[in-house]
Image 1 (cartoon, one colour):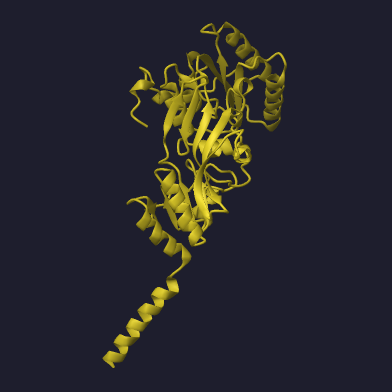
Image 2 (cartoon, rainbow, N blue to C red):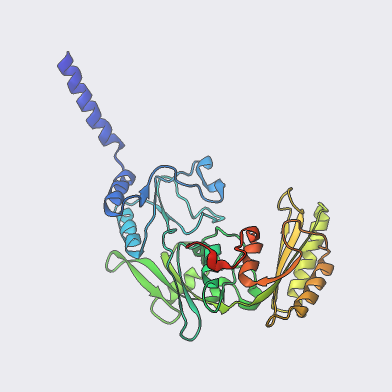
Length: 360
């Protein structure tokens, strides 16, 4: 009896091992073997920023992979392709409104270790930005350059630049510098070569054979066209700005509609200078003004008198004349400090300059 039971146990264990084998588990095993230690995790995988696409809604990836360079991206994609395992790419904390930064029972490729940064000073200031940088990091690294450089982006600090560019790149100072995609001049992208049947890294520019690929990733968020490991952004010299904010505590839908209409009319008016940019937030939180705005206005070179006037006109036109409570009402500051402030990180801004910020 004992011998029979023992054989039964052995057979049962072998059968169980076979039954639970799957392409995903095989892929994870190979990823762990091919990539450095701690590059592949299966526990405590962070949910995306938008939790509706996370574990509470039964969207649970089998693993998350953290490649540290383009070659490791190629390796990871090659293994997942071999085992036919679905992959989602996450450049920041997962701000995709349509859930592109997570996948159920698949592999999430987190680019957060791709953090290269350099500036080509020959001619235009072309900044090379690693695909894993978030907006606040990109802003700060550019401001450390001499002269300080600017990036006309949004005001969510943890948004990855990959998702930002893929969505077109709307943000502050758009009237002056355009959206992010307007200033994206090239990208290093991992793509699948159907002829060679292999993944490879290519550089897409407006004039080479991968021009269509660059066109697609400059705002073509509807699909994934490759994994971008580096973006090349045409930066501008950052100057002094006038930061302003205001709000209202009148929680009324009709009141909101009026503020929005006045805001849009003012921003689209031919008389509004392109150096002025404002964001209007409606009903954001019960802990602050129910409607508030903040604005940035470029001063030339340090004279902000024109900005004082246009900001006052904006407040009067929109009726947002109360305090926002959370932001400075009016303050002259550097472009980078204004970006930190718009992200509600102003209280953490280094008082003696960003050179004191620890390495990112």
